[in-house]
Image (cartoon, rainbow, N blue to C red; front, side, top):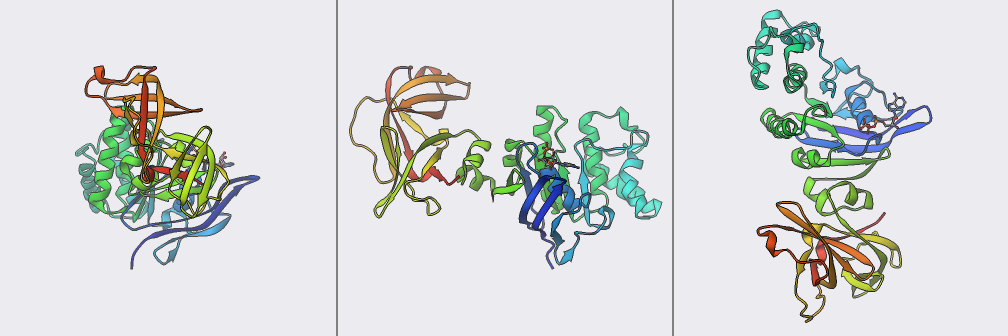
Length: 361
Ligand code: ATP
């Protein structure tokens, strides 16, 4: 029997605030799923309902065929890691890590053995007798993780666990946590507002906005095929071209001020609608040629423009190009900074039709 986690039609009201609004998703057993979204979108409330610290106003939470909606946190095969770590400052590392086992009446010998094992796993072996306040922030984070893992949960819930660490340590821990999850094979549900962190670690990302699911998918699906303006702007940088979407029998295109170009038809969009098309800057290539031969083909879109600005960022450069009333950014890797175009020069931008996403909202 699989232990997939199902969040099914879950809504949570706090007085007049609808923190979570009819959210449903499944987390396949053994996968790493991230709830991602801006502050206040309902990530923590969703996680706390899976953990049992909040009860849904409506909806159910099940693990395999076990309905855990009304179970107390300690009755569930789940465990939570908090951003604040929530360690007991006056207890030793060993007492902190062994706490959950003691609560579950695990005999002291077995407790000691399991605490030693888990400290090994988080790379702090032999630290049982250390005081919590002697440890660095990164070490405390590992102890918080060890304390949650020692009870062998089926699902580990992590609420911005790396939020208090500096950037370098945070990046190292992202990779370590992902490796640990793969090694242990247990389900991780991870909350963050950091899109880069979500892209780095997750098998799947659920994007929340204002209490609702905006889109879910693998990191590549979310980044490469955003469905809404919110997702396109929240994940990575993008070019948004606004215009009128026109669908005909022979294909679709966007009328965008003085220019128009073909797009992939989107069945969810209505012909004549005002909408946006998203194109990632690295998908836009730039040719510094004034030669004007040929135009857009069925799959390759080309538009003529003028270089407005060149922003050099070391390994990459962002080249701003004016095309009619719109501006597009083309991003490229820099090998020689002397090869970059000069502002004011004529140029041509090019992208493949499938890299332009017609956004429905
Ligand atoms: P953050 O990243 O800032 O932690 P979040 O996405 O985790 O945000 P939640 O903490 O789930 O968001 O909050 C969602 C909404 O519910 C917010 O408007 C918040 O103010 C509200 N909220 C959360 N907990 C409570 C509570 N106990 N009482 C009243 N309102 C609450």
